[in-house]
View 1 (cartoon, rainbow, N blue to C red):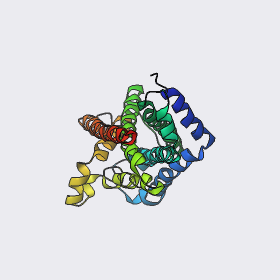
View 2: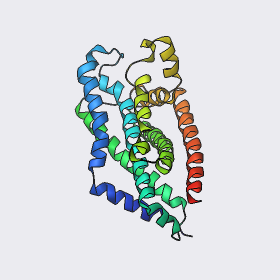
View 3: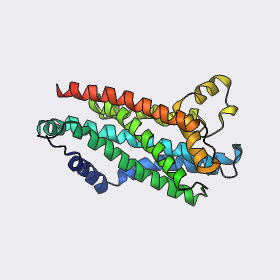
View 4: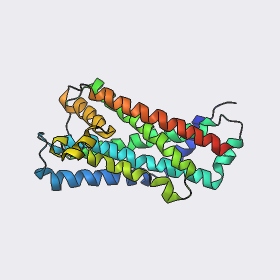
Length: 249
């Protein structure tokens, strides 16, 4: 059987292009958060940086991805509930193509959202001394993080009984950057909160991106960030495929 991932991907991308409000809707929340923290709270937050938007941006990008992958669950849920998934499965195509089309669509749509957020950040004063290799490393980290959360999103997309259930899992993911180094240094947090913040995946990913964009010395953060993303992706992929096969049965 021949893979038709490109055809299925094209279908999903055309749907997004016909309704660009999806990308705009996903971008609005992190942009509003960025505006709020920079122009309302930024003056009171001490991070040791000259421009708070520079400190804030990595966390905002992760929030954008967490918001965006919710639409992966929604699109998958819609295909399942409408019977479109069953029709695709009955066709002479490689069955995994159905899931990979949704995953690749998530990568493309989240990349567009990230570009929009970075453009707004530039208007707000964001500047970086990163070179091409640094930007490629940032792109790789964000791409891997998107894949990890997307495969996580596939699970409720296949199993949820309602539209709300398909997207509800994304709320804790959006909230997670608040208990990390995304908005303030972890040193300013109470001890118990600080322990959690310093040992959860968002902090290492934020620190790695921030170091690549501004500080130049990444240290172990990049390896911890990559490890977290790979572990989450592998576990989520395993359960997503398991659930997909159960759905086929």
